[in-house]
Image (spheres, rainbow over the protein chains, first blue to last red):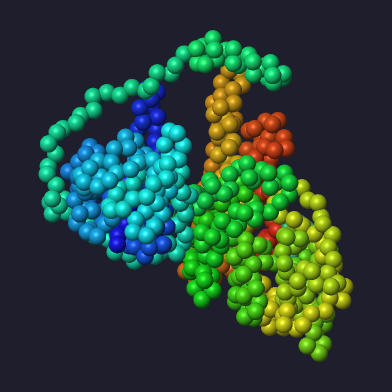
Length: 258
Length: 380
Ligand SMILES: Cc1cc2nc3c(=O)[nH]c(=O)nc-3n(C[C@H](O)[C@H](O)[C@H](O)COP(=O)(O)OP(=O)(O)OC[C@H]3O[C@@H](n4cnc5c(N)ncnc54)[C@H](O)[C@@H]3O)c2cc1C
């Protein structure tokens, strides 16, 4: 049995520059495992340790995602092996196309019954890839997953839903997108980092995969930051808590929030 | 010459950054400093992530690691603002791994794994500070036992530690190279008593005087060979000085970053104070000192890794790093103006902690004493 972790080698937001118009410039940012993905690595490792499954990392993108640092960074996070598609024809690819390539890789690996991913990538933040991947594979797709554990013949899942937490069990193959705080991912230690260089990496050519070329072109025209809102800047004196609470309620009512 | 990081170093520093963000934020360090507590939970987290056995032989569950990488990690932890957060225990444990008995090794490694401080180093005495040969603590071997008498002072972490690594005279004579032996004495052995010292630096490390009155232990407490204690201690001393230098580098970098940020935000005379050339001059000279310390630390570490004899290099590096780092923190404090001397500000803590490093591991002056003699000898 194999568990796939689908992750992105993405620019690190700590290095991003925010322009005065609100635009985010990632051009000088160093890349790293996308910030919301380590939870997927950790969940996969925990399930695999309980079931004896193999954990395979999969990432697709332009040629720059395949460096020795990028490989070791992923492999030091508990993967058994790694499969990469790195092709400049995927530069700036939309989420549907990325999901199609990921699906082709997952099909090629075979024997996969679980794909884990983060909630979204840290740079694009659309949160579409995982569920589109499920659609491409024809598998069940669940987002907002806060816990996964193996049961007899399937998995027990918990999801964060607006009304609280929902528990469910599933059988058969699925793609799960984990919440950013689903689990505390372990920090790779020296042994994990040194061991990473010795793990197998397979680089697949885009041409070998059964993926149709992009049918639709998507071009970003402009972007704007959300409206700042009309701030009232009301400061309530808190020295008498009861009076302050009453004043706060009054102010919120006046603003038609309550 | 390659100043770049290897993939492994980059990933290790990334891991450490993650761990520091989680387990060692400024609020944690400030609270430890205020309440005079040791960073035990952070040490434990370091151990769990495999950082606390770097450089140990694999047979003891460690991972071999070069000195350059170890110093990078030491620098990074102190750059967080935590003094003595990484490195010293590793080196001390190395003394035991190299010279200790099987039982001593197992005991010390077990304590390290639990995030504890396995032992403090008991060298300094009221009458023997810089001058080791004036040591008067005695260790008398008789019928399979050793009896200790004497006083140690200014000992770091002893109140927090299970053992004291005692340096004591096991034979008469002033030659420290043959008269001194090394022992592991449990801090709770009958006859051991302590007196806590209140110091104005290093709040996260306790300090005390230790009195040993007829403390009698089985001879198995001897570490290594009798009469070889001083040589055993010296063996890792250069590395220890390097750890101190790397610690100073990180603390000074932290002070510099705080001061530069403050300078760009604090407005006086209608402008950020960073726009005044006098402040820029300070920041520029601080940056030069940091660059010099960094080059000194990494070049010296590289020499260790190449097996090049350090001769005076370790003492030169420790002296320069401790003094220049303190100057950086002092200028940082000046840039903060009056709030810099308020208790609870990070810059005041860094300034205090850096001051302590001009004594521990040998004073500024003793570094001259060591390096100066060596320089003259080499030019005779
Ligand atoms: C924060 C801190 C932690 C410490 N931790 C430990 C520890 O864990 N274990 C331990 O054993 N010790 C420890 N020490 C003690 C430290 O090693 C000694 O303070 C140091 O060796 C100096 O000894 P002293 O304080 O007795 O000063 P002294 O030796 O009395 O020196 C006083 C002054 O005279 C100078 N001086 C002395 N001899 C000479 C000379 N020949 N030429 C020129 N100047 C000279 C010194 O540099 C100093 O300025 C610690 C000290 C400090 C401050």
